[in-house]
Length: 397
Image 1 (cartoon, rainbow, N blue to C red):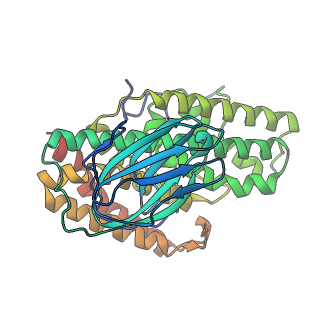
Image 2 (image 1 turned 45 degrees about the vertical axis):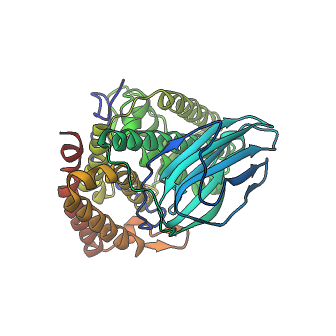
Image 3 (image 1 turned 30 degrees about the vertical axis):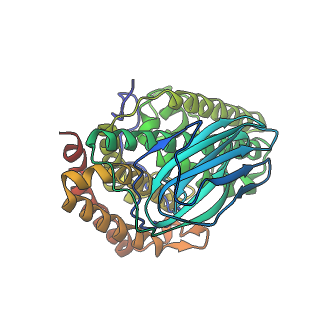
């Protein structure tokens, strides 16, 4: 199966700049068990009932004691649904049950320490779901983390595979909305969807780049094109939506063709990720690749050269790297606790600097940053890159 190595015909990393999404919430999350059982083991407070419908996700508790948690999920809607337990940031997936048909029930069993979590039902298995906060309070009888190292690695890859699937599904939903607006000539709506939708791509970019044909079709910049190569994808649409001086706009037929191709290629990407086999070294290497993309070229502003939405991409790359690290963190703490602590510290420092450029739900246009601000970001990326380069060897060798 394809790994995270950049294929021969994919774009060389380091020519994009990146994005600013959800803030990091540091919660010591360890998932020691994630199973889909027909008969769940007892938990301290009994099962947490979840009722999913087409428009609601009713969770019977907003606060539960730590330890083994059993979610009993019933689908009372008319569409197939999924249920997720996520970290507080809403990105990292701790466990999921999927393909719950109308009228059916399934269980999700996890072991969770005290902290803040997010629950989500996803009717129709589309979008980011119907979400709510869940507080897990200290119980005093929390089961210790599983000491079996291979089990920790297997859990990490399972969690990351769920994350890739979820981001792919959200990418497809967003791309369909963007493509519809773009094809219809609704430039204002398409511009509003552009950066936020691309974040789902940027978070899993090493996976996407492992498919050598799809990456250039969806993400090639004009400067990357080879002689005679057809230019399609996000950056082709970007130039039309944020046109430079002297630019000749696409015709309605040309916009429609670009939009249709983007949706078709994204559907292909989502289907391929469903069967992608992920290993622990792919998580570690993928995290480093994302940081390398930022460090070696994203600070130049070349990625989003017309829209200047580079900070959205920057944040998304950091999100993806952090999720991979946090999935591996329980295993890393057994092998090199000092490295795990260093990575926690440096991810937090970089996130704090990125947050200074947030403007509510949007982010500062990259061309408005001063050279000093760009240098501070670059220095923090460099500081994180060195310990992150040691992650794979620490958990695999």
